[in-house]
Length: 169
Image (cartoon, rainbow, N blue to C red; front, side, top):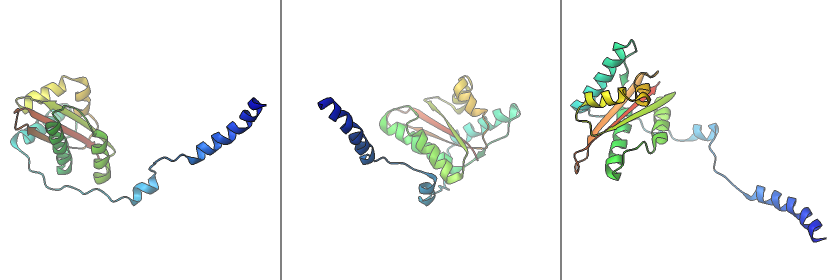
């Protein structure tokens, strides 16, 4: 009798539990009503950043690929990540999804990729390391149209942090 009663009550309890749960979700309708993130127009490049961008474009051109157009907003997002890594004493791609979603929303990018490097003495040495790494090289020779970069030095350790973001717009 107890088993029979339990079998009758269990489906009702399961139905109640399923209907009482909630979850957060985002759909296209919600996205369209969100405020569009701000476009960052001003970014001041240092000599190493400009050299790295030129080296990447020269390499791409040497193998028959299009040169990439520099976008200040992408460099600003790269700088934010360098600052994060310096402040937290880490070397990683934390929050890449957030950076890429921002670039997609603000600039209309279809795809976004990122390379990072730590403590290379020159832009050429950082580029050579990326080119010698199959995963990083894929980004450098990828189907992208735009890019940005930030190279920042940790004021305490002197280590240089590189974040290079590519986008197809």
